Each structure stands twice: as structure tokens, then as C-alpha cells.
Length: 342
Image 1: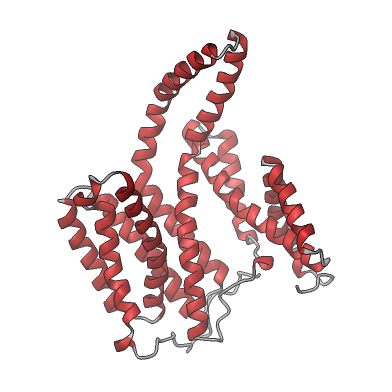
Image 2: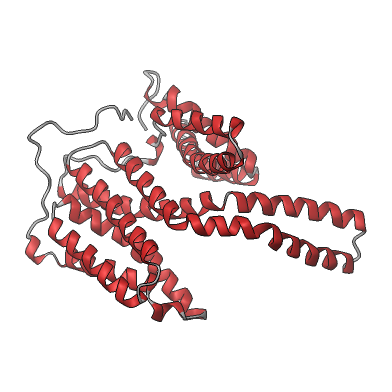
């Protein structure tokens, strides 16, 4: 996949949905954004607990995925009036339902869905390559999400040492009561504490990856819609052709340099960026493996066994797949003359 060519030739018009006045789904999308805002920031939902809170969280999660699809669909059809009407309604309803509290997070949350969706819709309509559209959309989600949760991550990092001390003290008492020796308990506590510190350190990356995953599902739904509206578009890329563009490599190099020579803040940021990039490189590596498994005509049971072995190798399998994905970003094995299409 060559991302160097992005835009359609001049004169290409954007796609339009048929019979826009009767397109009920578009108006459902307009309503969905204010509803999602109320569920996330409304005071009435903030005091729920138990099963109701779980149902609200699940509803917000699914509604967010739908909004990435629905808003991009409106942008693809150039229906700016409905887009901005939905955004204005979401802000007004959010301010009223939240009592004016958490205005910043609310605006960032709405902006994240709107801007990422508009990028996907408008650039797809202009025939930009899917890899560039997806990267720009995912980067937008990551930036808005990071701005929204930065203060929370800082508070978590500040409170983590005290929380870990308390947890380790309780765990030590439990281990000693179970008959562990002081030395065995200390060894287990040291390992557990290191794991806890690593987890706290990469919480930003883990949460951002979750937000990008929601966007990815919505984007997948959208590209299916775009291809139905304009068969000339080729938005959906088969999994066996997934590949991280070589243009991402400078970001990886700068991140590694920051990790090696930067201060503690730079190292924490670099660790989180590396975790996020490693997930995409791992997916690209798995796509490369699947490509050659299909090319060599391995049976389904053999492939299942292969992936089970990959799973049981834990971090080793993850790093091997990520390394393959990274090397393929510049080697591009699947597009070499000797390679055959799947």
C-alpha cells in the first residue's frame, strides 16, 4: 500500500446519499450525539450504580462506535447542516444536563468524535487513500482523548506510590498468613510491585488504544457504507494486506531517542507511544503471517494451532509479530515481484 498519492484528480465530486430528505438514519445520527453526551456527562446518570451504570457504560460504548460511523457518513455526503446542528444540540444539552460541570471534557469528547469523523468522511469523498485517512482519524482521536484525560492520568501517577504501598502491605500480610516465608513473600511482592508500576506507567497508552479501537470499528462500518455509495472507492483493505506505512518510522525513531536521552516525563511519554505503535506493528505482523499461511495453503486446523502457539508465547510472540510488522513497513514483502496475491 503506497500512501504517497492521496487526493483525487481535480473535478472529482463528492458522493451524495440518495434521497437525503428521506434518510432517516442521518437524523438518527443527529439525535445520537446529544443523547451520548447526556449519558456521559449528565448529572442524572452520574449517580447510578450497579447494573444500571453497567448498562449506561455499555450503551455509551456502542453509541460512540455508531457515531464515528454516522457522523463520517454525514460528512461523506457533505451534509454540513446536519453535522453542525448535531454538534450544537450536543453542547447545549450537555451543558444543561451536567449543570455546567466538566465543560472542557464534554467539548473535547464531542470534538473528538466530530473532527475524526469529518476527517474520515470528507477525505474519503475526495479519494484520499484509506491508510492516510485512517491514520489521520486515529491520530485525531488520540490527541483529543489525551487532552481530555491528561489531568486524570497525572492524578493517578501521583497517587500510585501510596496506593501500591498500601496494597503491598496488605498482600504481605496475606502471604505470611498463608505460610510463606519472609524471603518468599518479599520476592513475590517485589515482582508484583514492578508489574503494578509498569501498569500505572502505561495506563495512558492502554486507554488511548481503547478509544482508537472504538474509532476503528466505526471507521470499518463507514468504509463499507462508502463503498456501497460509490463502487469506485476501495476503502476496505483486506487483513492480509494490512501494513504500517514507512512514513511512521520517523515517529518511532524520535520516540526511541526521547526514551534514551529525555527526562523522566519524556521517557513516560515515549513508553506510552511505543506501546501504542507496537500494537499496530503487531497487527501488521499478524497480517503478514496470515498472508503467507494462506499463500502456502495451510489448513484451518494448522493455522489455529499456529495462532494458539503465538498466544501462549505471550510477550515473545507479541514482540516477534511487532518486529515483523516493523521490518515489513520498509521491506514490503507482499508487493515484491516474487509475491503472489492472495
